[in-house]
Length: 247
Image (tube, rainbow, N blue to C red):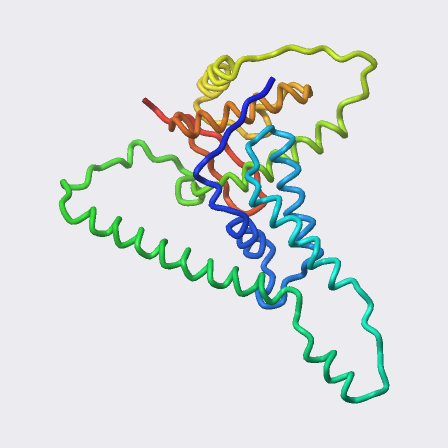
């Protein structure tokens, strides 16, 4: 079964790198290339496992990170001559170009976010009186974080894959059962309705079949795209909750 998904949430490899730097709270001017490269490749691998459409620019960035990592692992030869030592000290840091591009990208991203906030503020100038929606609020509304990104979803999917590999015994036979995306979407909606409209992300993967997990993930992406569900997370790396949006 081949099913490719490409969402606007992917803004390019620089956006993914900036997300990793912010998530792991590292200094953008002193990037630990080994750690960031490992996490970046994890995302690329997960995207391929899920048959997502990985643009070539992501693979180019992966090759760039590996090249930088290789340069930084090369041994530095000591020399007794002062002039040669000074030349080594002045040698360009292989990360410098990447840092420059990230800083430039962060400036434009910050400017875009500010313009978006201004647009949202201007859109509120002509409004009706606010309605009392307290009856629809849940007790945990103040604690929820609703800006779950596709990167967070991929990270949650990595955990699901790892848990299923550990818990599922190896089988001597493989049973192949193709499930249409539309069918799985309807199953997820019914599953949410049966428990009051909210369920943990990991609870939707009750079948250890890799194909079943991939179809379930793609069905969740489609439900997000058509605004049938919301994804909520209290903090980085915490459990993601799927909630039904009332039509």
